[in-house]
Length: 512
Image (cartoon, rainbow, N blue to C red):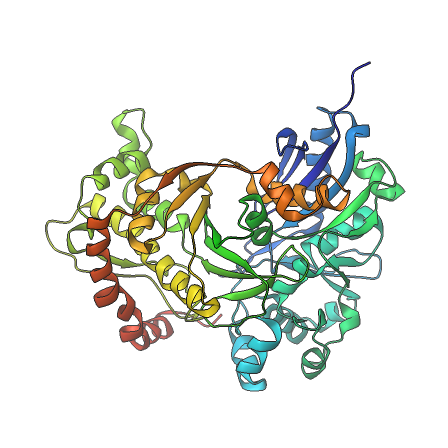
């Protein structure tokens, strides 16, 4: 008789798709299913999704996965997801309007309202996050101030995790590490920030019940089983946001290891046992009990490279070299010396979160001359993002009084040898590639594996399920050049002209 391999499922409901991956005890992806999630843009700077698409795509992904394995092999499911995105639902869990997505920028006036209404340092200390457009809170305020007819129908505001958990189990519950990016949490008390919500005419009862990540949050009910094909009674494990789970999937759980996701946005983070707040980062709940996750985010990451290629280098595809435009540009950029022959870029293509939290910020390039070409701009993008990573990484290390031992990198950008080496040279921190293709989904799988007793703790699970490959160590000669460029030009550049950049944005933007 063939023994069936026990499996756990990690579900990653991201901004663009839902992925369901079945993981073995060794962290091997045994089967997977995927389904796209459309992004809606009803107005300029507005981004929405039909929350039913989260559920439908989750069901499709799970059903696709179940064609490849026996469902009796599955022992638990855990969800990770896009953060800050929320949906208002009625008492039956049905959306009263489209969900508002994390990248939405309609709440500029509500951010200004919050800054006038509350004490900013207190808000940062309370929620772990400075006031900005990224958390759900200003978007919830926009909703309550602009759609009273929908507010009247709203029973709960749910994050993506909470919405999926409800439709799997029938419980209005979510994970602490899924809800805290909403910006409505008392981080040290581990519950909703009641006084803050009351001040803003909201109530804690309008949000889901909170549970620690890694605990059983419910069991698949009959309706959930019928929709997904999962067995009734299967335990659902409280998960965490995609950033926190990526940290687990990269094994960035100790010894000064930080993770660095070179994706559409650039996210990095490190786990600490002490609650620390600083404008240079966001403080989140780690998926490990009693720990916190210090995270930095640059919204214009690989997005900036994609933008550049689409706008200025798409013609390279016609050369028929069997290479992508990015590969052609990288080959040319690698021949340039550090500093891109005097061209420097500040990568605020989608405004800036940490450390400035400036919604009026925009990208900057300086140093242009007649000798520069597309490869110079391409290298300047790679270097600019690396400089920005040093800016925020140095601030995190200073705040926790601990140096990073290495960055474990993942995401599409991590495939670039040139970029990995540039980041090592600029930051002075070794870069190691994660061997996990789906680190975020694996992080959810690790939470499930520990919850059902496969491993005694998170550290043991991460060690068993993850690995690293190539290592990039800082080049001393390049480091010396980058140190001068960073300290003498990049570090003071944006603060010096920030007020002018803001005026430019104010003049050129129409009222949102």
